Amino acid sequence: MTRKKTQVLPGFRLTLGYTLLYLSLIVLIPLAGVFIKTNTLSWEQFWHLVTAPRALASYRLSFGASSLAALVNVFFGVLVAWVLVRYDFFGKKIVDALVDMPFALPTAVAGITLTALYSEHGWIGHLFGYTDEFGHFHGFKIAFTRLGVFIALLFIGLPFIVRTVQPVLEDLNPETEEAAASLGANRWQTFLRVILPQLYPAVLTGFSLAFARALGEYGSVVFIAGNMPMKTEITPLLIITKLEQFDYAGATALAAVMLVGSFAILLGVNLLQWRSSRHLAQLAQA
Image (tube, rainbow, N blue to C red; front, side, top):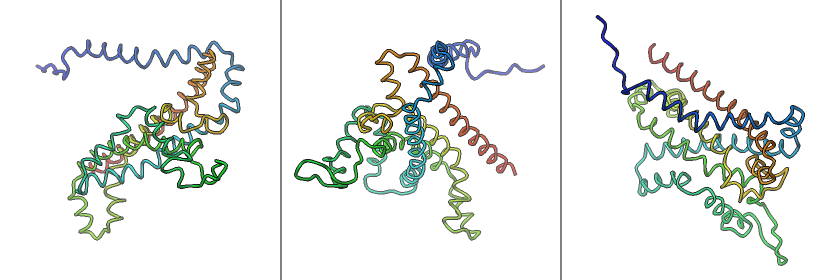
């Protein structure tokens, strides 16, 4: 006589139903509404809206800056996580708490603060040039340029990498590193061949989270960007502009492009993560 399998959750069908209902109300129906509203446009109208020069310039800035910021944050995020896990120093808990600051800080406050710091007369921005007697700034501008957008995306994306990689580093078995060292591997070889393969899935997860957050970011970018069409205008701002003009179909058309593009990139990242996890599992069984 076979024993009935005990479910972890009591009332599995009921909880599954509530889960699917909640997911539909919060995620699926709003996303479907984007495409439903876009269907009010003809193909020619849709193509004209999403391939307009202003829209293409906003795509390049949004996707390009988000990808680059996420890649840079991968390097520095892993470095910060490594320091927090492997070393003890004075003020470590303060540094650990500061990593979460972009999570807790309102995005508008972050944008205003970054703009004040990197503007021509800011604490950091004035170091890259000088102001003449007529009040004109000469030098390298950061605020109200694409570099300012990039810095804002770095700020909001770093915690995703650190908090994703940090638990994996804490769970790494130091005996594997000792074994590699005993076999003659130097520190760089140990990191590349022993530590990095175990961090790879977590790094990909952190990259995808940082990229997704940066791609949809609005509050911290809109102040420091300057919002100049064809130059520093991000796609979320262009969508808001169309909504303010009551062009709902145009706004949803741009949103649909962003949704499809971000989904394709995240799908590719998840496939890489799945392949790497499968490869690590095969190595563990060997």
